[in-house]
Length: 275
Image (cartoon, rainbow, N blue to C red; front, side, top):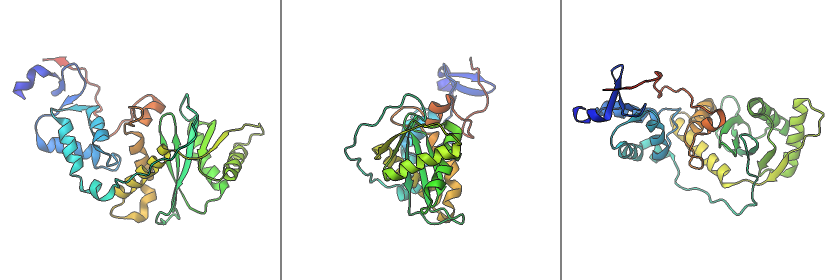
């Protein structure tokens, strides 16, 4: 550390990279290993790839050649190698979709089915994604859920937090979407003739998110797949707190304008002073 003193500044016995609030991590392998595990292996980290893992660590910490260390760590992750599929479906040619101007204005709705039934009777996931921020909600449900039940889930998990979207994107039958919207209006108790644009299609982002959800589940449930629905809230957080390639930001930040507090994040607000 002595040869790096000109690059450091200190506060309360903590070294920071000069001109930054990032904590300088010394060349102590167990400590760096702990941070790598915390930003990649734990449930709320999501076992994402090297880019997302590096972006997460680099928000708060720094050490030389960090990118190389992250790449080696992720590449050697046994869980990732066994659980993640390298095959991705290619999206077909689609009609242009509306460009949202704010979060939760345009949303897509899709289902992941064929999952092992849990003790709660769930065997499917309702996946809802905001096309502006890329935020996703992963809602446990069952394959035989009626339109009314799906509408109730949408009100409970989406409208209660984000309001009513102006556009729904789904590859479901248009009759389903029409009935779904009517059920939403009924549950809200409104008699106003509020309409929504329907787009009976899906897009590459939705398919990709479904793949991510399945990857997260495989990594989280490698020991007990029968309780996958219990992991969904934390996995949803992991996805929404990871930097999205399309925006360069996390969905959480784009929706709320702040980053959430996590066990990874230093709780102190440093005011570093030069050595």
